[in-house]
Image (cartoon, rainbow, N blue to C red; front, side):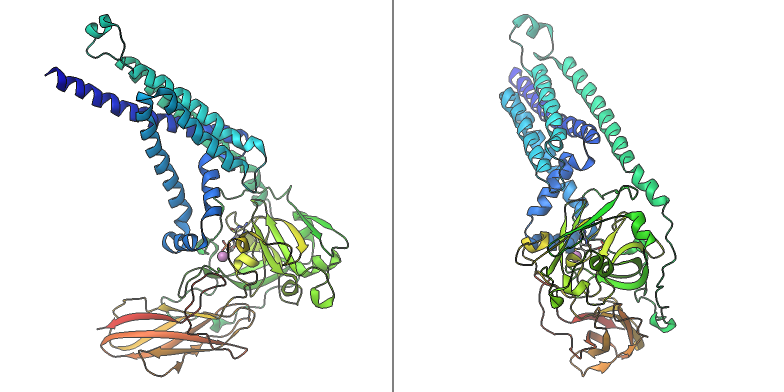
Length: 528
Ligand SMILES: Nc1nc2c(c(=O)[nH]1)N[C@H]1C(S)=C(S)[C@@H](COP(=O)(O)O)O[C@H]1N2
Ligand SMILES: [Mo]
């Protein structure tokens, strides 16, 4: 029977060793969280490794993640990192039972990886960003070494006889519980401190009073919003407005210390403006529909809001910038955000008279933190990744030859005007409407060109014109509806739009990479 007992003990020790590894990982992360509060929240290991992973994810995978997890993509990534670390902790704990030093060294190596990721992030504040991971890993490594120490079989026969088993069960349990409690405390303290760091930004946002715009938005015609159940609302509420960015920690920028610099090629008078400077300038208010290049045909990454801001062209002219068509040497404007994102926009588009702006307000309020507080860029007609820099802090005039911004380095196109698209909002796919008149309705967009016509096709029948809702401006989407005489059975509804240049939305299906998806949106329904 002795053999069974020994293997039972061995099993228990193995389990406790794995647990030690897990606990060491937990302690390392908790301590890292606390240290990150002294450095920067973004320097924490999970955020740093996650950010580095996002930067290195191949475009098709990133696109797949956005499609499948939507705005939860970042949560899924962070949970994935935590699950991986937990598995590694379990393995390192078991390794440590046989090779105590190697187990601890393993923990340290992960600390070095985390530190390297943090230091090499584009928004890194330097070598200090490596501290959270390093200090955390050091604590984790020492803890693992200590815990495993109490699991080691003692050689003295006296002890072996005196105790039920030959290792220090009590010592282990005490040390492990103390470590768990201390880690939880350290982690919670770190979280609280990190939470407070954004407080200045929150206060500064609460203090913003948006002035009346000198140039208010033209009123939205009553007929622009259809009274059809299931159709998108013409103005998308800020809370449900889609969000696409690479920020694992939403930047919290204090508007009172925010500055934007405009400089670079052909900038005769480099400018630095504060938030207050912007508010005191002439403000314009416009409805603009924004779209993400990662939006699939029929997808959700499109929304329309009422923005307030200053004309970017005004600022550029003050800085002495000329567009290429008037002899300016710079054809690309590179916007840089506080989190190190770069977006490149054609200078010509920004200065051709359209309402390109530095926005300070969205739907009557200061920008929310997720949508870019305090200031973001917007250029009607261009996908977000080449125009809509959130948390902007720097604008550099350069050329497309000289510089590739973030997404272009990752195989997306340098220039990306929004493609004409149309979407069926209702009926939903696989809906089961009753036979009779069924309202088919949705939205179509071709920003800065405008929508001229929308057509519907039932199965392989002829294209029939849909009824267009009132057009607001060429920079906003347009609603449409079609009263369909639905007959029982399965049917496919397809929509296509024509923009005001007369170009019909192409049937050719392409993926979102490199410059946006094309093709017609179809919905299959069964009529009862
Ligand atoms: N700083 C920063 N700005 C950014 C991005 C980003 O990742 N970081 N993403 C861009 C992309 S791809 C799009 S589509 C729009 C989305 O803006 P929204 O999240 O306010 O809808 O922001 C753009 N601006
Ligand atoms: Mo995007």
